[in-house]
Length: 189
Ligand SMILES: [Mg+2]
Image (cartoon, rainbow, N blue to C red; front, side, top):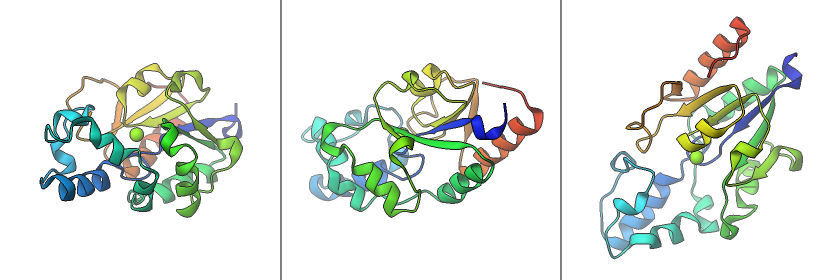
């Protein structure tokens, strides 16, 4: 199998663009708090916000306007472009509530990630999607994917989770891992 037959399943939120950070800046203003991304040490963000906010944090996080202030992570666009230059098909796979359906496609376009309708999938069950490589910050997705080569993208909410597979701190790490995989021509989890 050569590279052009291979598929990277790439998450969007907090892998290509920072979602938790702008969510917290809006939350801090509304609820007069001082939370940072590093304070969110579990996936369930409601555990860290004030009780009067609770589930309302998701009103902020899943509002289409949040993507007006989501910014690309350092190295993400270069990383995607490099992987594409290797002949890999990049498919953006993202869990999207109905409130933001389609909004992340526009965000990807606006930030030069060049999504196409064939290479953009919204789903909460990423195990259904066929791929060779996966990058995601949600351990559930990394565990359940059928992709052989997978990377957990480090974030404060997954650092405490037990995972013996590959982790990356940033896009440089991802490219290093990708090069190791392709040089060794082996499939490592
Ligand atoms: Mg994510």
